Amino acid sequence: MPLRIVFDARHLNDFGIGTYIRNLLGGLGSIDPENRYFVVCLPAQRPLLPPLPNNFRCVQYRRTDADARDHIAFPAFLRRFGADLHHIPLNRVPWFMPKPYVVTVHDMSRQLLAGTGWRNQLSLYRARRGLLRASRVIAVSGATRRNAENVMGIPHEKIRRIYNAPDPRFYDVPSPEEMEARDRERVRVLERYQVTYPFVLYAGNIRPQKNLPRLIEAFAVLCGELAEHPRFCHLRLIVIGDEISQHPAVRRAAAQSRAGQAIRFLGYVPFETLRAFYESAEVFAFPSLHEGFGLPPLEAMACGTPVVTSNVSSLPEVVGNAAIKVSPDNVFEIARGLKDVLLDGELRKDLVERGFTQAHKFSWERTARQVLETYLEVVRGKTSGATSV
Image 1 (cartoon, rainbow, N blue to C red):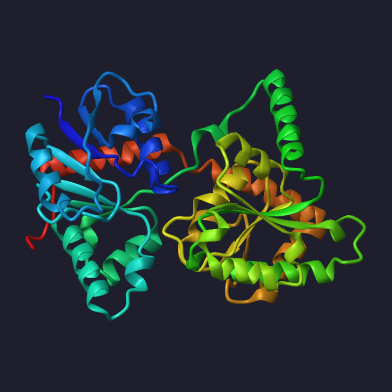
Image 2: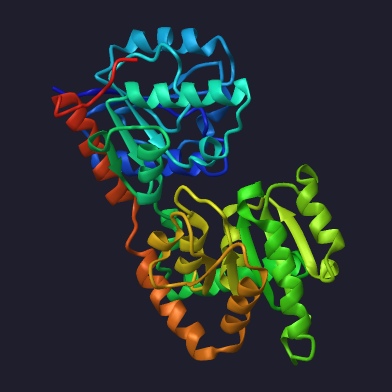
């Protein structure tokens, strides 16, 4: 008999979680024609869903999980489906969430950096309680799995490490005609943004753990060292992600930097524009202090761009031996990694080749199969390890 699975998709609009939701649903839709899925989303989010087969049904619900009433209202709403399983794709579990359910943990920086105030401690308790009551916890990397065990006290046997993957569109193999069209579009994108110079690229959220102020300092050091270079004397740093007006610390770092005039913040851009920037960058820089997974370096690798990233958190396991890994605390080490990639042609070629190989180790079909196996484990009742809290 087909299973009835409820999937909470209310974070479709989010930068990272939304990517996870869209691609996981698309992957499940491509491999599972049997089970019935009820995809819960807000009324305005339906157009954001990927094309899904007939065994997937979009169900509208009007409250976000930030609404305090959601702790009661959402579980009551879910009970009408008589589901065999529920999937919450991030660690914000309603207080009275019906069992069994699976939770995906993406990033535990909030819990790792939680202060001692009562609000922070209450948030930490809620997060831990939600994970302990779950039948399974999906961790998107080995580093996140270790954090779930060590910080939250989640039993090892309850956690499944299931990697994320780049958007499948990054893996497209275009025909010669399509390649020509894509090249023309890339030229148009650069012209539209008036990019006529070589550039270092960062793409992602601009949160404190992303370490943008140190990247800006490192870029200033790099510009000083390349001031006499015939080509890279015109080097720029392009940042794609949040609106800079929302992040005063990063704005101050750019304004006070010696290279401030060579830094551009573009905010969010459409997928095709993002891919054009990935493909055109000299090097992709991602010196993050903490990542649950770290998708942007793989996206850059899939586009043939060499990567300089951090040697901490989940990033070493994600990029393998296909990137230059540096200490995110050391401005001069970040600058040196970028300089090596810019000036060493053989190193660039090697990183591009390794990057393609590394990026193709991850796929949403593989991720979806592992998630489906996890669903079946739970429903079949194999060593759930769920704790009553």
